[in-house]
Image (cartoon, rainbow, N blue to C red; front, side, top):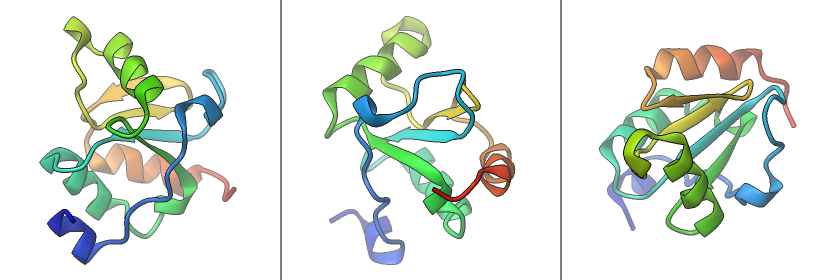
Length: 106
């Protein structure tokens, strides 16, 4: 189990197939275990994490494929975050936190 999971609970998993396609409002976070940038984001948004959909690209091949088509060079760079249908690669956690504060609870 990754160390971050000892500090924070794992996000509730969402399949890429269950994510509303852009331009729908909301926040979708594509992530993977062991990524320090994802860990930083998870910590920063921990109090609002239930307002986002979390797709683990190591557990969801369709999510991984989406991330490859979104990032330059076909890389699986995470976190890749959709905010209101716009992709952000490794965004500043403050940007994601502000979007989550605006997002309705599911």
